[in-house]
Length: 74
Image (spheres, rainbow, N blue to C red):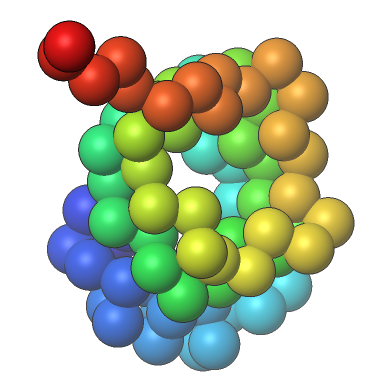
């Protein structure tokens, strides 16, 4: 659902608030997550390298998550 875009994701989350979302180990590198509602989502072990994380992450499980910025060429 998240790969369909933030608007589709947020609409689905609004319709399904009690659903526990498990995105553990997901490859979300370079994803545009601007304003995505990811609160209470399991993102443990996910790859968020270079992702736009200006999102709602309140209560999200970020344990062992890769939050590194991509290396810029010199």
